[in-house]
Length: 310
Image 1 (cartoon, rainbow, N blue to C red):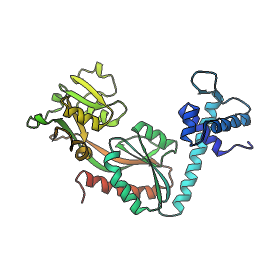
Image 2: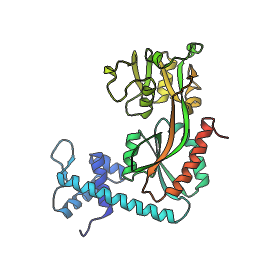
Image 3: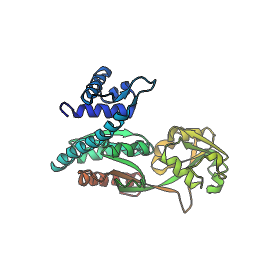
């Protein structure tokens, strides 16, 4: 097909992902009219409409769905060719797109960025912080090179590289410091503060309390007396300090989140709730050797953060 360009495919992919011309243009760092023109030229090449503009919410036509599916295959292939060139050139350099879940990013990234740029001075690090589900989708679509998540992911197309393990820490009001540490059954009787749905740490906390995060808590016989949600670990800890309940946070977050809050902390007895933090990437990524080096650096930083390393 004469005239078809990778730029058009990238713009069309962005439009399909964002379902909005303005947001797609912003993601592509171009003006909305410029993006609309490229989509129109793509439709001219195909001789048919790829986007239904008549509905209140933009959607792809049946042909548009087929086109974007094939376009993504092409874009992933092109990205892998670019990665192959980068791998052949030796040490990691240029753009490196790293995703991180929110319950790791503030506590691991500052030291990680310093360590990575010292080891790979030619790297241009691009970071994306979001929940696991979105990171996995971006990895599979080749919009990220690697991601830091809680393992296991159990996605056949992704390689998992364990970094470190950390405990879950109980955070409760300061006046409760001398009380016995509640077991999971006792926790279910308390007002439990958790992150909003979509965060894997929420699911892990519910799992420790032996509550099904897959189904509705309202239908669970083991639901907490009252469940409250927050948008970040910092919000949860401050809510605990205000006497609104108790929460669990990962060990790595402890120094930052509790230093200015009127709370007490406690470790659970064995078997303690824990999570494994790891790095994942596409198995087909030609940068696998360089990614292993990045993983080793992150492992050292992470283990020091949780007191397991020098």
